[in-house]
Length: 168
Image 1 (cartoon, helix red, strand yellow):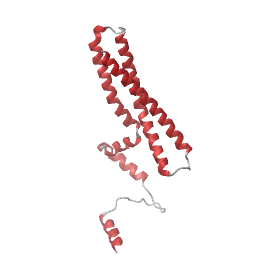
Image 2 (image 1 turned 90 degrees about the vertical axis):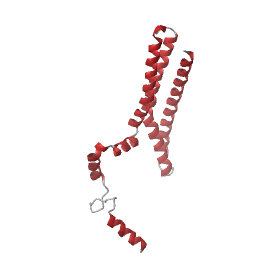
Image 3 (image 1 turned 90 degrees about the horizontal axis):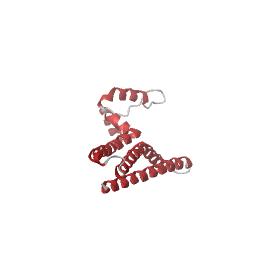
Image 4 (image 1 turned 30 degrees about the horizontal axis):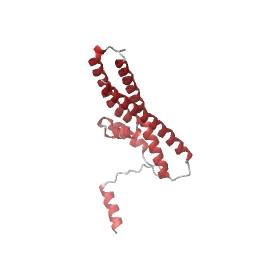
């Protein structure tokens, strides 16, 4: 029982440290992004925006994992000090194991929900989303100065014409 308690203490401490680290990186990336406006190159600013987005998308997952593990940690202490009867130990460990499995399942789900880029990738491969994707493509297309839409998908004839021009 002390081994399980020790592992839970270590896991809760790691979740707390990761939460503090994610919060620090989130605030630091946001601050640096706005402080460096017009000072550093666009490549570095893009990297700052990517780190900000990564911290922002992992924040809900980290908070939920921290909260669940703190509840499990407190319940282990309650079991140790006999607030929860020792006779209910097996049922408690089954419940605690299911809770820890829930945390392992919930973290990636919340991370995917929090990340815009990953959600967009899932939306692109969703077979039920083709009609909505076609509507967005028609609305969001790039247009020439005369208002006609530019197609980025070349036909076979256009490709061979461009190939002949480049070889000539």
